[in-house]
Length: 141
Image (tube, rainbow, N blue to C red):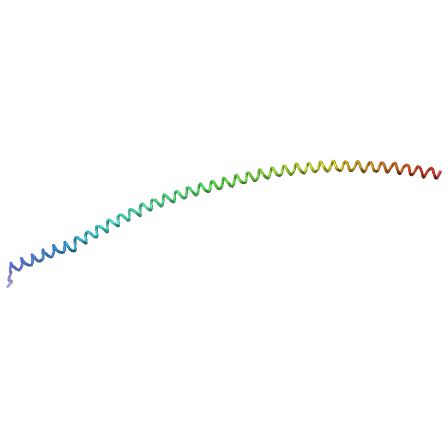
């Protein structure tokens, strides 16, 4: 019935073992090596991504800090400029008020002089009119 031939079985077992050894050398070892290299490469890239993410977060925090400082500095500069402008406006306002007061005083003095001049002319004219009337009265009498 079954004819078992040990010689053929040994040859088949030998061929199977040789095939397994050759497959291991030519297929399995390079495949395992490739997969290990790929895994190592992916692990390295993931670490770099993680590191870059941390660096990015640090840089973003630093940028936020710099922006906050810049906003604070800008606010201070604007406030200082407003204060200086306000002080300058007050100084100019006081200067103009003093100039206006001086102009008023000058105008008062000028009006006083003009008033005295007109009063003197009226008094002079009054004397002239008085003497003219006296002359007319004398001629009429």
